[in-house]
Image 1 (tube, helix red, strand yellow):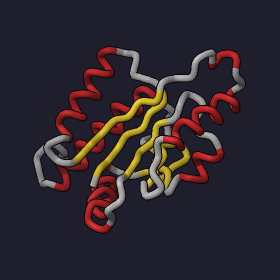
Image 2 (cartoon, one colour):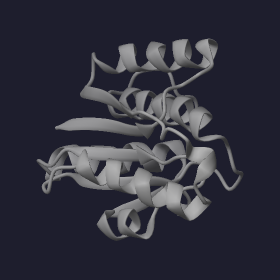
Image 3 (cartoon, helix red, strand yellow):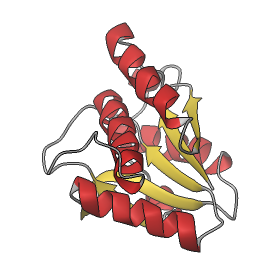
Amino acid sequence: MKIKLLMIGKTTDAKLAALIDEYAGRLKYYINFEQTVIPELKNAKNLTFEQQKEREGELLLAKLEKSDEVILLDERGKHYTSIEFSDFISKKMIFSNKSMVFVVGGPYGFSEKVYQRADSQISLSKMTFSHQMIRLFFTEQLYRAMTIIKGEPYHHE
């Protein structure tokens, strides 16, 4: 199984990018993990929030395969503990041969077409974080899930 993280816009903070790369590097020992960045829209300040979401949505949808299981990282999604998230990932690894694509939208969220294409939604917190910080939180939680699945001493209960 392959797990992909699909994102709008590059991570602009070098320290944040380095931490994301650190966890992405650790993940290669457990799973086939890939990050794909879709460049931010040019002249976005000339667009309404809805227009921006629609254009970003078109770019996101163009990167997806029909067979992909698409999971949006969205504040309205299902909440998991780290253990529950590791169980979720473990079951997908056992019972599915689809690529799992986790999607981080732009600063205004997702278009309706992206919501319609999604198979599910996950929230990493009841709080709102920047779309750039979510990348780090997700990558760390995926790494944590892999260590839980393997019974390694990274996570403490």
